Amino acid sequence: MTILDLKIGEIAEIISLNSQKLPRPMITELLELGFFPGAEITLKEKSLLLGKMICSLSGTTIALRIHDGNAIEIKLKQT
Image (cartoon, rainbow, N blue to C red; front, side, top):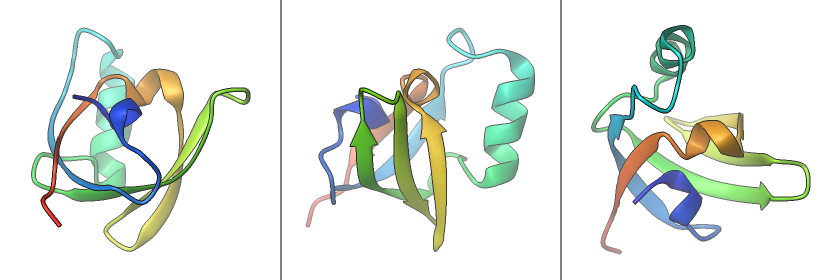
């Protein structure tokens, strides 16, 4: 399951970043932004037309390209 599978408002835990789907510099950038295993992420908005999604991660709102979100593997949190 990746961030793309989330519905708006759902909360998930990041499991891993798929290094085969992203170049190394992008993985480094995501890690610096807080996209590390164990972090909690919430999907706020998703626009397939614009190719963007907005997530809340550790209290920070971050815009992410949908293509990059496909490489972030998650586990849905039980609410």
